Length: 206
Image 1 (cartoon, one colour):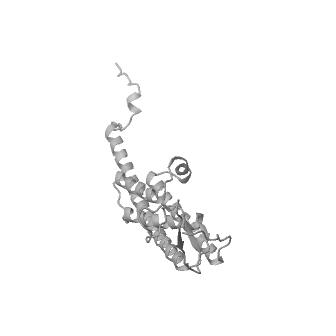
Image 2: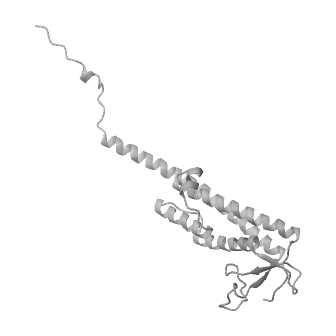
Image 3: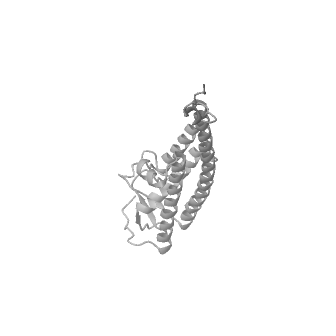
C-alpha cells in the first residue's frame, strides 16, 4: 500500500460510532465478567482482586470450563459465541487504536492495517502487514453491522446470566442440604432432657 496522508479528524458520524463500539463492547465484557463471578460465588470486589480477566474468547472458554466443573449447562454454544465475539473485538481494536488515512480510491475513511488481527481477505497469503501495511475501507454500514452484533451478544449474555444464576442458586441450596444431612448423621441424637442426666440422684430414705 502506498503512503497516504493520515486523517487528523474523522467525520462526526465515524467518531460517534467508534465511541459506541468501544462503550458497548466494554459493557459486553463486564456482563461476561459478572457471569464468572456468579459461577465462582464471589462478589465483584473479590472477583476483581482474585480472578484474571482474559480476552473475550478466553473468557468464554473460562466460563465453559467452570460450567463443566460444576456440572451446569449453558444455553449458548460458548465456543461459537466466543469466536463471534473475537471478530467484534478485532474490529473494536482496529477502529479504536488504528490510524486512519485518506485514500484516493474511495471517499470513505480507510483504516491502515499494520497487524494481522483485522486482515483483508483479498490480501495474498503470507503478507506481513507490519512490513507492508494494508488498507481497509470502513463504511457506515460496517459500524451498524458490528453494533448490531454487540447488541445480539449482550442479549445472549443476559440470558446466560439469568440461567447461570438460577442454576447456581439451586446448586448452592443442594450443597447446603447435603451438608446439613451429613452433619445430622455424624452427630448423636440429642436426649429428651440433657440437663436431667446431670442432676444428682436423690438417695432413697431408709
